[in-house]
Structures are given as structure tokens and as C-alpha cells.
Image (tube, rainbow over all chains, first blue to last red; front, side, top):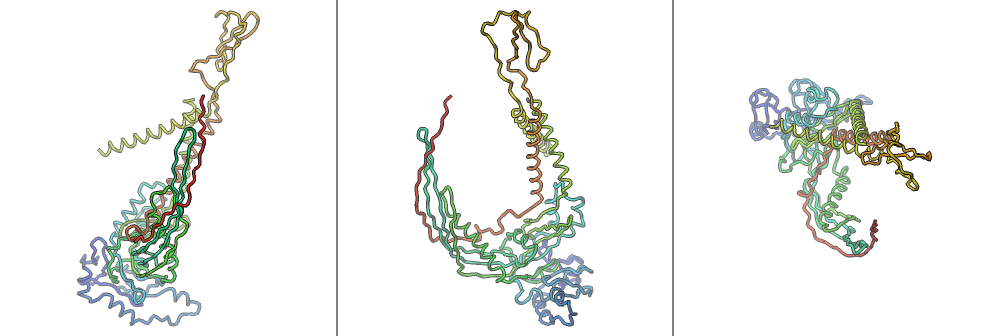
Length: 361
Length: 157
């Protein structure tokens, strides 16, 4: 498979998108270029990629018997910098060469039907992401020993993940039963008046930019909860933004996730209609019906700082929104240390309570 | 300035913990203490007695002395002043202390455990800003009115 490596205009070193400078940065000569400058020099960056993809024969040939699954789920690419042949999985769209660590973009992964419409570039640089993770771990005394180490922080990777962005106009109704309660006292009797209402709300809701992860697997929950992103920072997609980061291609189509998206939008519709019911003491939703009037699906790439680690045979995941810094994940706990702390705390409190009880009795 | 602030915060936390433990101690002592039975005395046809007839008891837990009269009767005397000691049930103190300590420890451990998770509590989709509603139908129909009454018991002592 052919790869694209975006090269520095001055020294031909590999270019990476720098989240702090918001430019394409060369680590060798420290030159920085805007997207327009690169386009002026190289022409349209994606045209090169599309041409490379068209020229390539992607039909697997001479696959040994029994290795058809392996061949269909993996791809071999050649690093433009050092010539090494590397194997990666079918959803990887951009990565680093494991030998020379040059950033590479796999030519046919994000073209044609799989070409995203827009992208939010990374806004949080690697060092800032590590600092935020370090701040998250700070004062957590029950982390495993040596957890916050240089080797651990190196596992943090900037990844562009695929999302479906849905614009949906829905018409619906909400039916609810509500009550108003009033109490008063006359003499020795307390009276309670309960008024029951049947309530209906209906209208058109215009959902804009509803995100849904377009990648299945263990990361899908993290990808959902690192949202929201600021939609104002979307830019037209170009491959150059992926340089210096990892990227994943989607593995779900619209029809695969349509039901999930409809269910989530229905839940939001219920919240929106319910917010319009005011002035009651209790509200019980009886029914919600929602119909889609029109819908538009776009495919976008969003930045996430991701870290996986294993501890005591369990896999942990930490994800950070690459634009806003919102994080999602779980840290491992040294359960032995926590148990010892619990026992000591228990004994101290029991002793103090007993002593206090005796002295005050 | 920051050091003073930290020192004040730590002092307040220590005082808070001490007050909590004191309150627990009160709860423990109140629950564990047993009041003694009320004193009963026989006054009918009681002869006149002098202080020479008073013998102080060695057992100060329950009595402070006894009066022996000519007819061989004995009147047990008990100190009924407000500073009298109450008997302490050690088993109750231990059980209540262990119970309180267990509850506090479990709460602290659970709080620590949850602090190691960041589950993205904020809404992943800002529907209030991104999903405007054009409300077209509103209907609020009163379907039922009910009134119930409860008699309030007022005990007059």
C-alpha cells in the first residue's frame, strides 16, 4: 500500500500538525507552515492522495490458504522515509513507522466514500495532555507504584476518531400526567388537595451536529463521553491534519447505527418537551412519539488523546477530548493499599468513638 | 499568606473531625448507659435516727451507707444527687462504636473509589443550545380533583 508523508518545504523532514502553533511543523528545522502555504507549494494535498489511491491495486493476491481473514483485516504499507514494510489493521488511516517514527498517512483509507467531510484539529498539544493527565492523577495515593512515569505517559497517543454528525429535524409529541398539590390545616385536621392534569406538548425540534462514534469496540463509550466538541472549530477535511497523529477509519455505516441514533434523539426529545412543562409538583411521562422530517449525515474526524494500560490483568482506558480537555476513564487502584487504609481508619474511628463514649458516659 | 490559609483550613478540618467524634461519643454514651432503679424508702412508722446510727458502706457503686435501727431494720441509702454515676454497658459501647466506624469507613472507601473514575458527567450533547424547539401544541386539561384529610394527634401532658 502506498503512503503519503508530508515533507517540509525547507529540509524535506516529516511534517506534523502542531496543536499549539496550529500549523504544520517540522521537527528537524523547526519551520512552521500554514495549510495555505503547503497548498501553494504542493498543490491540493488530497489530490495527491486520491491519485495514489486510484493508481494502487488493492486486490489481495497470492494469499496463502487459511490466511484470508488475516489478509482482509490487515494491510501492509511501505514507509516512505525508511522503506520498512509495516503491517497494520484495516481501520488505521494514519500512523507512525515503528522503525523511524515518521508519520505516515495510508493512501486509500480515507478516500472516496470514506473521505470525511470535516475535521476538528487537535488544540491540546501532547505536553498539555500529559500535564492534564498528571493533574488528574495527582493526589491519588492509591495508584499502583510507578504508575505516573515517563514510560506510562509515552503511551498516550493523539488519535483522530471517526464520528457520524447528524442533523435531524423531528416532529413529535409528549403526553404526561401531572399533579398540583396544596395542603392546609383547619383545627386538628390537615387537608391535602391534589389536582391531576393531562398534559400534551408538541413541536418541531431541529437537532444540529449530533455526534455518534463511527467505530465499534471498547473505545465507543469513551468516544461518546469525551463529547461535546465546539462545532465552530470544524474545518474542511484534509489529510495533512492527520500527519503526526494516529487516525482510524470508520467501521460502521449509517444503517448500522440508525436505530441507536434514533433512540438517543428520542431521549433528548423527551427531555426537551418535558422542560416546557412548568408549574407542577409531579410530572409522569406517559408517551413520547417522534417522527423524522429530514436528516443529513456527515462523516467527521475528531481529536482524542487516548491511553490504554493494563494492571493486574485488567485493561484500563483513559481518553481526553483533544479540543476541550474533557476526560473520561478509570485509573487502577492498589486494592491492597486501600484495604490497609480502610482497616486502619476503621480501628482509629472505633477507638475514638469507644473512648468518647466511655469518657462522656 | 497561602501557608496561613492552608493552616487555617487544616485546623478547621481537624476541629470538624474532633466534633464529629465527640458527637459520636455522645451517641454511644447515651445509647449504652442504663439508668438505675428509683429509690424507694419506707417512711411509715420510721423511728427517729441519729447520725451515730449511720454506717458507711464499702461498696460505693450502689449505696452510700445504711441506717440500722433498734428494731433490726435496715434502710439502704442511695446518693440521688445529679452527679451520680450511671452504670456503663461495655458491650453496647463496643457494638455501637464498631457500627459507626464501619459506616464511616465504607463511605470513605466508596468516595475514594469513585474518585478514580472520570465518567464524563456532563451531557455529551448540548441539546439546550443545539436543538431549538418550535413549540406548536400545548394542552393542560384538568381531569381530577381530590381532597383528603388527616387528623393530627396532639398529645397534651
